[in-house]
Structure formats: structure tokens, C-alpha cells
Image (cartoon, rainbow, N blue to C red; front, side, top):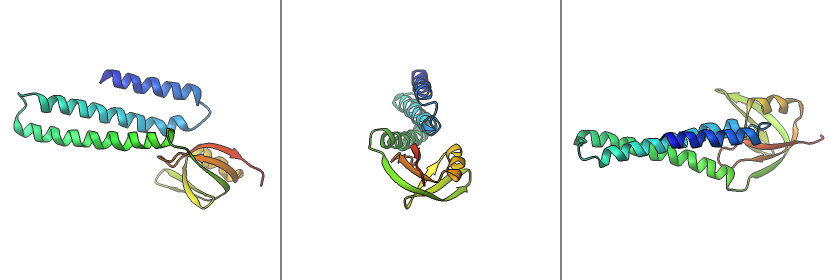
Length: 149
């Protein structure tokens, strides 16, 4: 488990070093942490389930813990896979209808609603015509190019 956490922090550090100017680190961080926590839950539950000294009632609880870990890992890993292994969606157009809902920021670009970080949200108010690359898993803007109106 400690090796998994160390690996997650190493990957997070590498992303931060190479993409310090981008919002990729802020988007990837929570998904990466959720994947590592899911793997840790799977490992802990499997150890308890395979232990012959674990009471039967506790095995039911650990089976639920295992299922929750698998779901947590699957959701975060599939999002990361879609963001980094699949080609990104390229949109071009005017950034219309900027809005916030419960701390999340959204914008319509070329007829599609995408998620944006707070920093990009503020910048899009003044430079509305853009070409963006959107991650297919998280639906966040990964690269942005500001175009002339």
C-alpha cells in the first residue's frame, strides 16, 4: 500500500513538473488518488477475505469493502484512461454560456458543454473565441488556444 501511495505521489510530481502551466495536474490528481485508494481497499479486503481466522460476518463486510474498492478503482482508472490514451476531442468556437454550479465551472464551446478550471473560467470571459482539446473521460479542457474574433 505504501508503494502505491509513493507511486501516486511520484506520478503527480512528474505531472506537476512537466505541466506546471496547465490545469492537468489539478484534474488528474483526484482521479489518481481515488485509483490508489481503490487499489488499497481491494488489497486490504482480499487479505482479510483470504484469512481463515476472519469470522463469517466480517467476511460479508469485507466483501462489500472489496466491491466498493473495485468500483472506485474502475471509475477513476477508466476516466484516466479515456483522458490520456484516447484521442482528445477538438472543439473550436465561441465560449458561450459560462456558468457555475456547486463549485464546478462550465462553458459551451461549439455547441458542447465542457468543464473548465476556475482559472480558465475567468480567462474565457475576456477571450471568448478558442480552440480547445477536451479529455474524453473527465470532459475537462486540457489544451486551449485563444483565437482572434
